[in-house]
Amino acid sequence: MEPDRINVYERWESEEDLARFRGDAPEPGQAAQNRDAEVGKYRISGVEAP
Image (cartoon, rainbow, N blue to C red; front, top):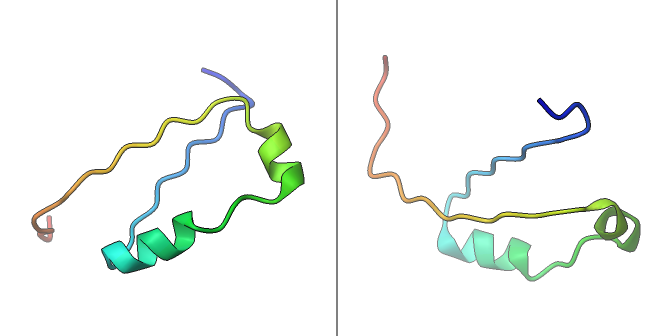
């Protein structure tokens, strides 16, 4: 376990919303604190109740 690690998961309603968000750069202070980033895109066909 890495006590200083933060995992962020995001869900977007549309490709347009994601593209709009990705067009914004992080604030300089935030970017300086990022040591590593790994980005993946997953497509989910549906969600069901348990």
